Amino acid sequence: MRPSLIRFAATAAVVLLCAGTSPAVADDGKADQSFTIEDPRITESSGLAASRLHPGIYWTHNDSDDGPYVFAVDSRTGKTVARVTMRGVGEPRDVEAISLGPDGNLYVGDIGDNLDGTWDHVWIYRFPEPKELADTTVQATQFDVKYADGPRNAEALMVHPKTGRVYIASKNEGGGGLYEGPKKLTTGTTNVFRRVGEVPWVTDGAFSPDGGHLVLRSYFSARGYVFEDGRLGADHAVQAPLQRQSESVTYTADGSAMMFGSEGEGSRVVRVEATAEDGYDGKKEGGGASPSEAASGAGGGGADRADKGTVTGGAVLLAVIGLAVLGFRKRRG
Image 1 (cartoon, one colour):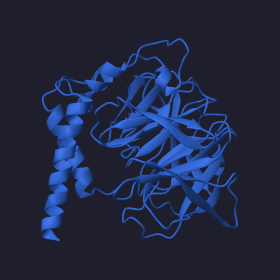
Image 2 (image 1 turned 45 degrees about the vertical axis):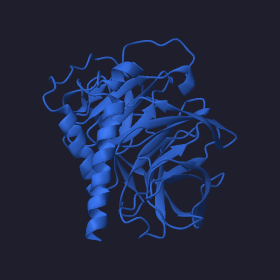
Image 3 (image 1 turned 30 degrees about the horizontal axis):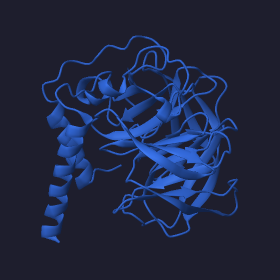
Image 4 (image 1 turned 180 degrees about the vertical axis):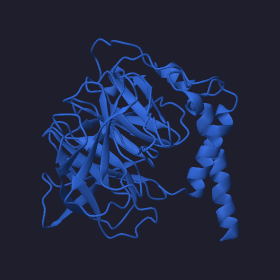
C-alpha cells in the first residue's frame, strides 16, 4: 500500500524502538521456523498462507503495482521456489491477502482501497494450489465483490478451513467489521458480503486449521477469537512480534504456531507458538518464539527485533505517534 501518515508513524516508531539492536538471528534450516524472505522481487509481502501440499512452504504476494503474481517461499531457506502468474484476471489494483481453502484452492484478495470507498467493488481471485513447485501460469477465476453496507477498505481475507466460506475484515477509520460472503462464490454476478461482527482496525487474519479460532492482527497488536457457527466469540490478546510494518499472519499447517509477516525487502516472518487459547492443544515440536520471546522481538531479525522494547511498550509509543499525526491533520483541516 502506498504510505499514509498513520502508516508512516507506525514505521517511524518501530525504527526508533529497534535502533541499535543486534544483527539478525540466523535461520536454523528447519521448516516452519522464523525466516527471512530473500527474493528481491518481494518488497511488499502483504499476505501469508501455509501450503497444505508442500510442507514448510508459504504463499505470499506483493501489494500494489506488481502484477498477477503469487510466490511460494521455502521457510527453511527463505528462497522463492515458485512464482505463479494468474491468467484470466484483470490488472490487480491492491492485493492485500491470501488464504487457502478446504477445496485446495488459493484465494487472493484484491480488496485494498487506499481512499476508503473509492471503488464500488473489489475482486477475489481463485486458483488450485499447484501440485509441483515451479514457475508456472495458471488459469484463475475472478469474483466480483461488494459490501452490503457500501464500499470500504480491507486487508484481511480468510477462508474457513471447514465450510469454505470467505470472510473479509475491513479497516476503515473508526474501526473495522467482519464480513461474511455467500456460501459459495459465483461468477457472472456480484458476491455480496454482509457485516456479521465488529473487529479492530486490522491488516490481516487467519483461521486455525480446525476453524474454531480466528486471529486478527493490526499494526499495533493482535487478538484471537473463538469462532463458532460463523460468529465471533470470546477474545484474548495475542502477543504478536514488533515489526516494522505489520502486514500478515497465518497458522502453520499443523496449527502449532502462528507466522507473522512484515513488508519491505528482506522482510522477516516470525513464528509465535500457539496456545490452547489460540486453538492448539497438541504437543508442540521445534523452536520458535514463545509469547514472551515474541514480546521482546526474539525470533525476529534486523529491524524486526526490539531487544529493549515489548509489544505493550511499542503499542503505546505507536499509539502516541498515531494520535499526534491525527492531531496534526485536524489542525491543518
